[in-house]
Image (tube, rainbow, N blue to C red; front, side, top):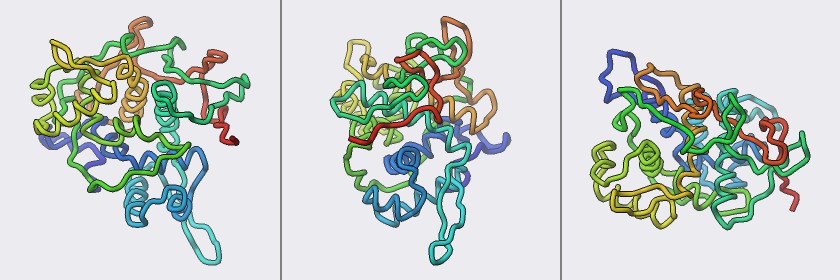
Length: 308
């Protein structure tokens, strides 16, 4: 992955050559292997090359390329340690730790909208299963896609969101009780799929409008729309394609992507999405709320019960 795909180009560069923060974030995160590497880092505290290789059954070449990219993006940093000889481990940076809420939101959607059994997330502060829901960080009330209003900056076009694919397709992670396969990864682990869903959240409905907004090949768009209909995320309607309740629920994940991207990957205001919580009028500041006590979930105050 080239450095240019991870940073905002100088103001003199044409708009179409620059990526919005969301475009940059999807370039980094829109990959199944990256998400599984991060998930293992948080959940099992995996830090070594051998640890990820053995946990995921990933080829060494694919793992090496993903770790290299995550270091270049400032999500991991390397630290030397001695185990007979000097080796290196990968530690989450502050930027990387900021992705914790996104991964929990993915877990939450998968738990609520698929039949898969996932390990419960326990809120240590109250002792209950958290069953997290999206909340507003200002008024601490639950928030859905319908409770928000979004305005796009003039340069926040999908032409400045999509980046060329960085990797050839490889066999995906093997399904297991820890993973987010298959449904959430079908949406988030493919950049075009994520762009289609983002466009749907921003009100795009008709095939021609998707194509015009995104510059996507008709065959690729047809495939992604078909997948989303099969997944129950979109449904065909007379006015085009509409988000189902299942699709609208994925806004929880989208909100954390937008928040992380616009906080960690600064860009001119014209490249940003302005998402407002209608009931309190505040800008997007997503948090996870515990359904057991209504408190805000903090990374150090929860744990997954993987003892079963």
